[in-house]
Amino acid sequence: MALKTAEEFRESLRDGRVVYMDGEKVADVTTHPKLKVATDTAAFDYELAEMPEYRELAVVRDEKTGEEYSRYFHRPKNGEDLLKRHELMLVASRLNYTTTPFAREMIDSFNGCVVTAHAMGNRDYIERTDAYLDYLRKNDLSLAGAITDVKGDRLLRPADPKQSHPDYYLRVIDKNKEGIIVRGCKAHITSPAYLNEMLVMPCRNMTEADADYAVAFATPVSAKGVIQIVHPFDSHRGPLDFPLDIPVRSHTDSLVIFDDVFVPWERVFLCGEWQSAATAVYNFAYLHRHTAVTYHIAWVELIVGLGAAIADFNGVTKAPNIREEVTELIIYLNTMKALARASCIDYVMHGDLAIPNPVTANVAKHYYADNYHKVVKIVEDLCGALLTTAPSFRDWQNPATGNFMEKYLGGRAGASAEARLRILQALRHYPCLGTELDVNNIHAEGSLMAERLTIYSEARKDLELYKQLANYLAGNVKMSWEEYKQLCGELSKLGKGESQR
Image (cartoon, rainbow, N blue to C red; front, side, top):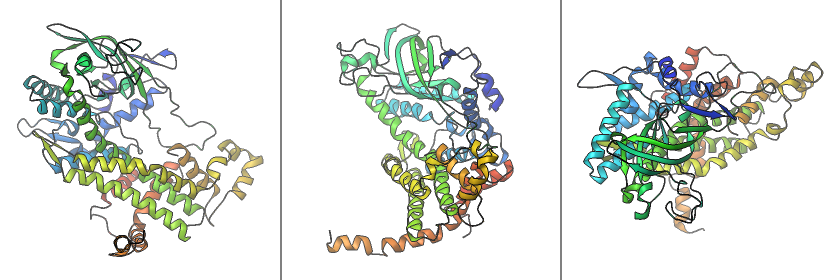
C-alpha cells in the first residue's frame, strides 16, 4: 500500500483510454492543451496529501497495519470522521482556487452501493464492496461516478418496446461465469476522462421488466469498450481579459459510451435486483448532497468576497441598503456552513458506516440551490451595469483609450480603476398576516433588523478575509504560495472559536 504522488497520478492516466474532444482523439489527457487544466485540477487531491500541514487531515493510518491511505477511502465511524472529511473537501477546494479537485469526492457513489448492499443483506455484494474499497486504498486510485442515463423518450420506461432502441439506459446484455457484459451510455459525467475508475449506477426506479437495467459496478476507464466524448470547454482567459498569475482550475464532463464492456463479478454490486435500483441511487444522492454543499462553500466565500469588494470599490459600503444586501450574503454563506457541519454532527449509522444526516444534508443543499439566484441578483445589484459593459483589457492597454478608462472608471477615492475592473472580471469568470404569533415570530428575541445588525458587526473581520481572497484571485494583490496557504488557514478558522474578533 502506497500513496501516490501527483506525478504518479498523472502517469497512471497514460493507460490507453479512449477519449475524444473537439472532434479529435486525445493522445494524452495530461498534456492535452485543455484537458491538462482538468488533470491538474484533479491532481491537487494528491498534492494536498503531500503538504505537511494537511497530512493528518488528508491521510488516515490503519490502526492494525500502520499503513496510510486517503481519508476518502476511510469508512466513517462517527461524526468526527465525517467532520474531518468535510474539512478535507473544503480545504482542498479553497487551496485549489475554489474548485474542488473531484478526484475522489465521488466516493459517495460507491458508498451508496455499500449502504444498499447492507440494506439488501446481500453477503456477496457486501464482500465485494469491502474488497473493492481495499483495492482503492491499496492503489490510491481516483474515482468518478457515472449515474445519469441518456433516457431516450423520458415518458417510457427503460425496457419499454416503444423506445427507439433498448440501449437508452445502460443494461446487461450477457452474463457468464466470469462476469457480465454491459451496453449503454451515461451523460453529464464529471471527470472520468482524467480519473482512474468509474462507479456506474442506475439513475431511477425499475420494474421487473427493467431487471437488466438494474446494474451497478466499477470499471477502469481504460476498459475495452469504454469510449468518452468530452464536452468542450474554454479553460483559459483570453487576450481581452486582465492577466492573472494564478493557475486556471476547471473540470469538464463526458458522454461515456459502454460498447459491450466486460465487468468481472467481483466488481458487480447490483445485477437484476430491480427492487433495489431506486434505493441505490437514493443512497448515493443524499450522501452526495452533503459533498456538494461542502465544496460549494469555498466558491460562495469567493462570491461573498467579490460582492463586498465591489461595493467597497464603488464607495457605497456605508449606504444602508448596501449593508443590507451584504448582510444577506453573509447569512447565506454562514447558513450553508452551519447546515453542512450539523449534518455531520447529527450523523446516522448504516451498518458500520456513518453518513451525514440525510434530512439536514438535503436541507443544506436545498438552501444553497434555492437561494443561489437570489444571491446572484444581490451581487449583480452591487456591481451595476459595468459588470457587462466594461471595455476589455486590450482597451486598457491601448494608450488612446486606457487613460480615459483610468480617469472615468475609478470608484471610491484612492481605489484604482484597474482594481475595480479586475473584481468585475473575476465576477464574470467565477459566477456570474398580522396575528400575534406572526408578530412574535418576527420580533421575539430581537427583530430581524437587530439580528442583521449583529451579524454584520460580528462578521466584519470575516469580510476582510473574503476580500483578500477576492483581490488575490482577481490579481489585485500578490501573494506567495505560503501566504495564500496562510489565508486559507485563516478562512478555515472562521466559526470554530479559533479566530479572535
